[in-house]
Length: 300
Image 1: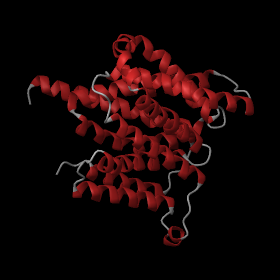
Image 2 (image 1 turned 45 degrees about the horizontal axis):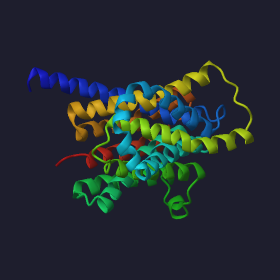
Image 3 (image 1 turned 45 degrees about the vertical axis):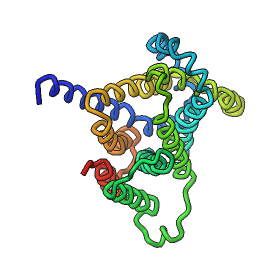
């Protein structure tokens, strides 16, 4: 490996690690801020902040892409609805009913499994036997977690409200992921992000107003404002830009493997920041799930 390639590799790895560290906090925030900011309001403030921040960065690209964006407005509607509105709002809703550890373990596992199945059905992608094996292992880990390791509970299993909400969120993200793969070639990445951020914010606005009228007023403080800034600037803008830059440096197949660190980091953060209890079942389920994700991403 030449010095230039080595530098690109190290930069790509650093960018991927930065992204997963930033993104891992989303599940912790969903649980930690649940009593302070209602879920739709949290989603709205996040994407409104992200939209404001990305405008100066993407304005030229957006202006250049405006005509083709208007031609594909129906496509942009569905991308924004699934990737911005439903995906994140349901994470924040689920934070009212289950732990941050469950959010991370279920959400980060179900999304790639759903996405792989959809890619096979709608994009006609080939799924290798080893990828199927990895997905089965992931699914087994999620079942183990949801049933709490009890065969009897598994036989009489029904979804808890929080677990069902995070699965809906993961399913929505899988649809988004499939739609992104069909992005019209004339739309730049920055123009695409700006369009989806703004469209998603606009779509959230009516639900935000309804929620605001039916919930107590938010008591704003430094912590709440910092969390909105973290979600809007860090999780949305910096996270996406770092992830895309990492893909450019080391390739998509290498970059995606780093996403396997998100449930580990989220679990550690939930224990340290929220005082959640790390049970043996979480450790076992986490090992099974992460093993499955790694196997699913192996090339051979």
